[in-house]
Image 1 (cartoon, rainbow, N blue to C red):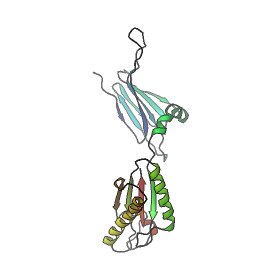
Image 2 (cartoon, rainbow, N blue to C red):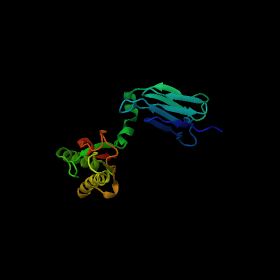
Image 3 (cartoon, one colour):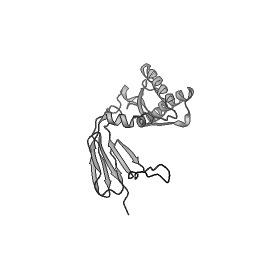
Image 4 (tube, rainbow, N blue to C red):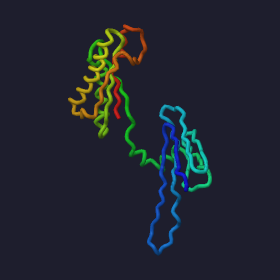
Amino acid sequence: MTRPLTLVCGRLCLILLLAAVAGGCATRQVPPPPKRGVKVILLPQADGSPSAVVVTSNAGVRTLSTPYQAADARVGDKQAPTVTQTSPREVSRQYGTLFAQAPAKPAKYTLYFRSGSAELTAESRVTLFDVMLDAFNRGGAEIQLVGHTDSAGIERLNDRLAERRARTIETMLVERGFTITRIRSAGKGEHDPAVPTRNGVDEPRNRRVEVLVK
């Protein structure tokens, strides 16, 4: 019995299942269908960080560690997966339609607040418009809101303020027609600062709500 093909993927790869397809009528000779298997193409990371994909078949193992390397692994092969080097142009030519159908990548935003309050700064009111535009342009988008404070003031009050900031943004989104069941809100108080400070420091960059639209 032939072992199934297995993959251990890095952070980003394109995996194509190769199914056997036969056509024509019963009286007509057709060439044998191709073997079933997978083709794996390692894509570059958006931030340029390294990644790798391990492709394992019954006959051997191959590791892809260079962007746009490709491995073909077929069920029943008696040799390890074949590795070739493709290119961005070739990947786009062959699989452009696939990429066009992929959902948009999650987008991150940061909204800042006035000291000791749940009132947005003027600049962040503009950013909130970008958040709403992005959310409404994605059919079925979900939004994650996490509120934060600086380390000035009493810790338990900062915990409440962080939650209130997240809830304030949630309310603004719902008032403008976004579905509340697709929003998740939480507060972390002063415990996860963007800029680490000593206790009691009024740091504007820590007074924020982090927004993830996905």
